Image 1: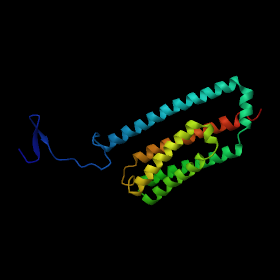
Image 2: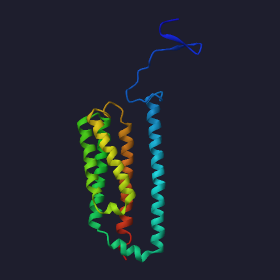
Image 3: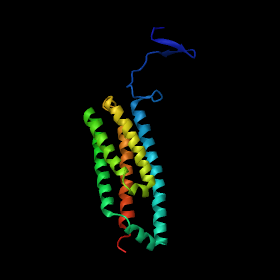
Image 4: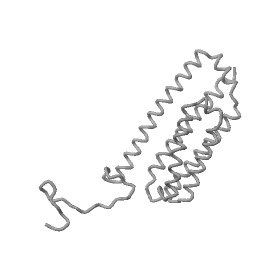
Length: 197
């Protein structure tokens, strides 16, 4: 028997360690398997979020139908200017997040840190606005996103995400874009749909 084998459960086994990237978790056989599993988990999570917010949108539309005059009055109390500015900030933030994913894929550490920081800074500005008090669940999702972005910035400064493993940045980018898309639906629903009355 050669030096490279050992007896495991009565049979020879290869004791050579297979080299794998430092970001590959021990319970995955390959990076491909890890990427597929994490991507599937992220899409599954986003599906549950779509169902959650879908329920909120459905409830809103039902109550709007039942109490239409009250909803028209409430809609006129909101500032379209501030809602439009919030929307512009969120879309810009979504762009900087997409650029962050690209920077991670092309291994640009400095640009990645800059894009992630810009994405967080623009969302923090929006966080302090009055309108997120009226959209509490959206604000909660933004607070979670800002916290994760802070963690990602620290890791990106240390060189993470530009060594070939960009799955975390890609999956977080999906979450970030989802939060922005929710606002794109909230804006017309809360600010515009009842103003013609």
